[in-house]
Length: 279
Image (cartoon, rainbow, N blue to C red; front, side):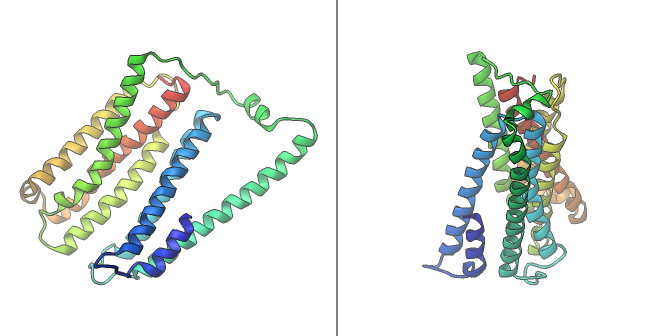
């Protein structure tokens, strides 16, 4: 379905129905639904595997966003909004090719895994038991107390609410700069920093049981970076007076990177805490 929605975007992105891009919106809704469903499916599946697999899954999922933003940076980086390096149809076509490449990798890996499992099944060996016997991971789902469960839910809600609200705030922050080209470049590199920061955060999240101050530092970094961007969004003149465009082109993406790096660390740690008694 995700591949079909990209194909639909390639051919219908410029079709307008009743002064609205209804076909493009429908394809985007379909893509978002597929993404959310696959995320929920993958995280539930990974509960049965060691923490390092959970970490690898999170990094792989966020890496997809990095590839998309790299494609966007190639299309628009250093260009005016009116003169991209290639058009919208080409962008969606390239994204479709990346999706098809992913399918090829998945099918190849499934074929390899099936070939490896077949001799073990013939020998009467359960592959899942083999995985467990060669892993130092110990499943330890915790009978957490009600206050702890509530605290985890509140923490998860705050982390995700802050993270998902930030992209909607970014256009207000860059409104301090009059030129449309300046706004476009700032938004572009902030979105690139968002995806790269999340991927790096997921990769950097520790899987050891004694985390020390890591969760607190990550939570504080997320709060400070969000508050900074929110301040610039509420008072754009503060940003314009404090930073020139060239400086803002470095500082604002850096703040966004910090925010999503902390989010990547915290989300990974929360999931591991719920499934594996990490702290």
